[in-house]
Length: 392
Image: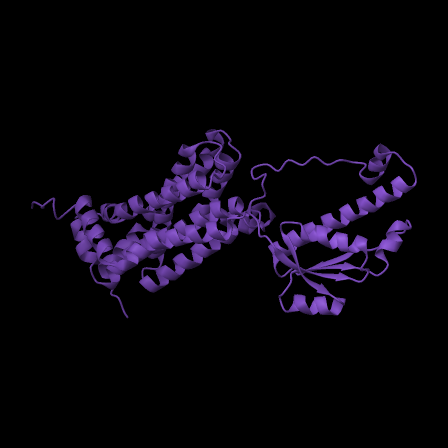
């Protein structure tokens, strides 16, 4: 029996899938629009690098020239903006409870008098830990301002006693700290977050589209026709169906890299090849995981639910928000099951630290290792494609 090559084989299946992609707006939205919106949204959201002008309330019971100068200097910090000068701590606390301010800086009565008389006045500051990033930044600014205030008072007292400046500074700051943040010396949240969030969204879209494009064959009762075009060979059917998605998602991933490392000039110490290779491997590894998902749960609803759950957990378990080494050993082991985890490690080593490619070979190999998953569940998927009937 002879087959028409135009109707059978990988190329015919790929052409069939491209026609299906072009005829449904859902494909266009998930593969192009959603990633583009995510790039624009997150990069514009964090275009300043750090949140700025975070609202803080001041309770200045001292109301002297020194305390007012302290407030002006605190307001001069980029992250801090004094929006409320409260007459009592209760008023400031109620503003924090309403969510109008993220922090309170409290200057007690008699602060200037005690400071200039050699006593130890107490400055108090409060932050709303519900908003972790805002509270951390305000805590840093208010603590810095308090340390500077203490140094200013020490300088004034030393000068009044006729001590030389070198001796005064030795008492105020006996140890000078020289810090060198590695990888992200600007402490830029956009560098810290977007280089993992955007590939994570790409991974999620790959999961969803892989599950959908296979699961919809069962829903539309076209799975047997699809398999017949591959002459019953499942791997040919999968390759033909997924090649168009691989090309599109790889191009989208490369464009994300162009925006991050080209337009936004984020650190890329090892050049383009390592990170672009990681993006391509992330795409095909995510497709392999998507095939595994629809094979284990061969119904469209359950498969998509599995993909959503797995994709969203990736953002928490890959280690960019909370270190994996600080997790329970079980979660440390489970983190290796997520392609985004290995992409994140490649990004840290290659883009941030500029290590030799040799040290990332394990992570590249792990991404390639995900391609084994479809072979483990292929029989189950083929059985579902041939026998399962969609029940609405």
